[in-house]
Structure formats: structure tokens, C-alpha cells
Amino acid sequence: MKKPHAAAYLLFTLAAMANLWFVYADNASGRFFTKPLLMPLLMLGYYLETKPLQFFSRLLLAGLFFSWLGDVFLMFDSRSEMFFMAGLLSFLTAHVFYIGYFSRIRSQKESFLRKRPVMLLAVMAYVVELMYVLWPHLGGMKLPVMVYGIVIGTMLCLALWQYGKIPANAAWLFIAGAIFFVASDSLLAINKFRSPIPLGGLWVMGTYVLAQYLIARGSAAQLKEVQGA
Image 1 (cartoon, rainbow, N blue to C red):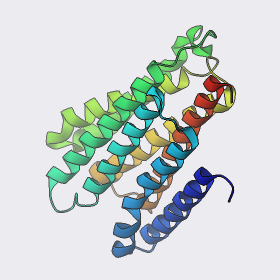
Image 2 (tube, one colour; image 1 turned 90 degrees about the vertical axis):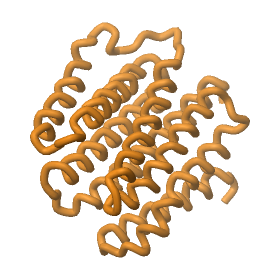
Image 3 (spheres, rainbow, N blue to C red; image 1 turned 90 degrees about the horizontal axis):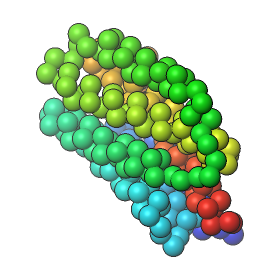
Image 4 (cartoon, rainbow, N blue to C red; image 1 turned 180 degrees about the vertical axis):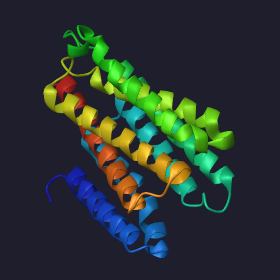
């Protein structure tokens, strides 16, 4: 394979497919082996595609790193609620880095949503509805989950804000990745706090790995445009 980053992305894809199979087959050993490989392989592919590192690529890598920490902590959440809290905090930090990334993108072009900001209310409405569904079941987790919901909603709004500002291919990758990330977090929360979802673990991991991949590739496309590549 001519491009090293393509090989790393291929390894990420194979590891993701293996992990999803192990989730479906309820193979705990396979899940524990493959899940910690996902974000490092994606980070490697992204690094090889975007090096030398710039401010934006460092932000994205930081987000992927804290996502990896979240993955590892959540592998042990059945043993102690502290692991779930550590995972929640790790993913919250990852989203803050993604928010920082999106908010710092500058362009001579105007966002499509600047003229139609009311459309962003749909995102806030979704977050409110999700909190409404989860609220009676959260117990002592009400405040952390509410904060997390606000953060993921903000991340999605800022991803949507890129449409019209940056080339369409990068914008759509960001938007799709953010939507899949919100979907993954929502499914995880419903599955954990409200009621089990059939094949819930498979849906959570499938949307999650797709979200991270799309955001990383969106960043690579955006940086190449900035560099004039």
C-alpha cells in the first residue's frame, strides 16, 4: 500500500470490524483485546495523513486520546461506578477538544446557518427531549449527564456551523461524524439508564467508530484545503 496512512486506516477498519463481531458474539475476551486498539490505530492514520503536526491536528489528536481513555475506563464500568464516571469525564474532555477545534476554524466564507440560526434549535430540542426521557432514571447522575448532554449538543451545533464556511466534503464529514457521535452517546445513555436496547452494544460501538473515523477524515480534508494540497 503506497500511503502509510491508508494502511493504518485499514488496520483501524479491521480492528473495528473484529470488535463489532466480538460485541455481537458476546465475546468478552475479544472485545477487551480489540477495543483498546481502535483509537491508537485511528490516531496513527490521522497523524501520518496530516503530519507535520499543527495546532488543529493536535486538538484532534487530543480528542482521540481522551476518547481512548474513555474506551478503556468504560470497559470496567460494570465493576465500579467510578469507572463509568471516569469514562464520562474522558469523553466530555474529548468533546471539549472537538468544540475547540470547530470553534477555531476561520474562513472568509459565511456559515449557511448564520442566516438560519433557528435551525440549531432542533439540536437543542433533541438534547432537551433526551434529558426528558432519561431524567426519571438518572438518580444521582442527573447533573453529570445534563452537563454531558449540553456539551455534545454544543459540539454538534459547531459541526453544523461549518457548512458553507469550509469545503463541502470536509463539512459533511464533520457533520456526519458529529451526528453519529451524538447517536452513539444517546444509545449508550438509554441502554444504561432507561432500558436495554436490542443489540445495544453493537449499535453503540458501530456509530461510535464511524463517528470518530468521519471526524478524523473531515479534519484531514480541512487541513489539506488550508495547506492548498
